[in-house]
Length: 545
Image (tube, rainbow, N blue to C red; front, top):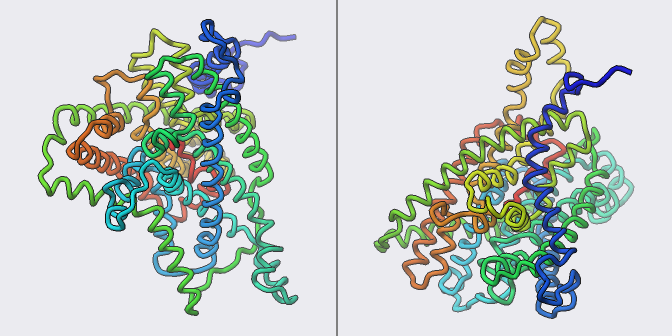
């Protein structure tokens, strides 16, 4: 038998080498270290803490159960609101519909800390709405639930619109011709077709809410903080590494179970079949226009008002002559944000491109792109803290963590583009004498450009808004806009709150600018074509949330 040399290894092996090393060193190894600390009781020598402590302690059990409850409640609210909204957008054609569908992407690029400040600007103690109505929702669960809906309602709506686009119009017409009412036709024909899509999106909603950090840290307060916030508090303020490692281990197990359910639903979906989609109709009756107006009103209240509220609060603070906002500290944080995000985007793009091309030869490798989405940034940062204690204050480690959390967006978007790449075009180029490199540069890359730019848009937004990893691994001189906003929120006085609002407005403008520069010029036809069957995942993969 001939010896196997490195030169005989498949090309996919070499393509996967760098992403595999990044996942192993920055994700799998820290998780293994965290699991060892949790199961072995490494930090519990002086206490009776066990791996079952979160279920035996009333306080910790409340944290876990509330984390599950707020995620489940958000799923129910997102489903109840999202399904009617998706049906209206999928079945009615009206002026501005395409713009509404495109704007549904914006909450996915807004940093979580900015969204939290937007909720406070509306419903906080001095919020625009709560102040006008004389109510105060501070220290209630409604602030966190509203923030969760801001991010996740659009995910359910997008999944619902895509799913309803796969419903067979002939089957619905046949049911109606046989005397079925519109409701019965929906229940018997449309619902079985769209249910797996919606359940898949709701699994993502649950994961994002259950493992969320920024929203829960700012909006949850002392009573309604989630497990992720508790882990951060135990590490940063109480130095209870044993209790934190046990909690992080349970979080990893619970999110892994939900991720397995999500993967099972995704397997059921597969590629969309060729169907005769139902044609959209122009609303003409009063009730149809009322449905369209109601859908747009809900989207404005849930998804647009927090963004507008930040702009209003920031403009008022600047108009009132707030001083000291753009001081040396703020300018340094802005510079850190820009340079860290730029380096992370370059690294994430490189890792994502290599991962996507390697995944064409391996289903398992393709599934590994979801791994950074399943693990929360708090768990990743804590694992890195335990595994590389001497590198905790290392800038390369911080930037590498940024890149690992961001690159799956590029990998998933590019994988979807490769799946839809017409094979005959590259074959024709090769038969005409083009070299593999020239074929890639002149044929493959232009076709993949929309998908690549979309993935880079989400990766850039993730790097700009990264918060959890920065709190764990950053040094004071590496403060970014997210950490500076959080610091200003923790300082007393209206001036600090105004400064936080203005800085949040700057951060949001950066995220939206990155999104517009990279994604907006893509033609709608190209964007939809590259979205294809992955739009149920790629549109909302923000984990950054």
